Image (cartoon, rainbow, N blue to C red; front, side):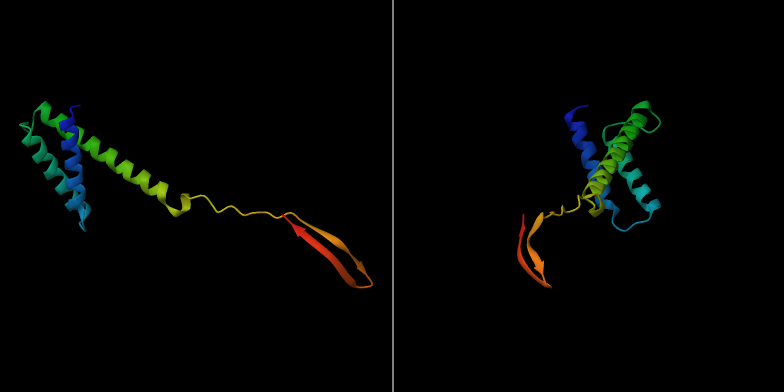
Length: 110
């Protein structure tokens, strides 16, 4: 795939993402459809041709890959996916005695 094609697909995906805002799923689908249609037509492809169908399939494939990447980034950064803080254990030793209810000695911890 040529660099210009990849950049155009990226621009379309970015534009489609920017257009989402607060819209319903149907409105979002209509926006994506319009952007993809305009992109393929801007490349001189006509609806009903194999080239147009391939263009739309490629744009849909790229949009799905972008969505998977966003989902993976979200899951990777989510709080439940972070390592728990490590607790430190101390090894303590008591040197002393208990004589007649009186305890005396020292404790050493590492």
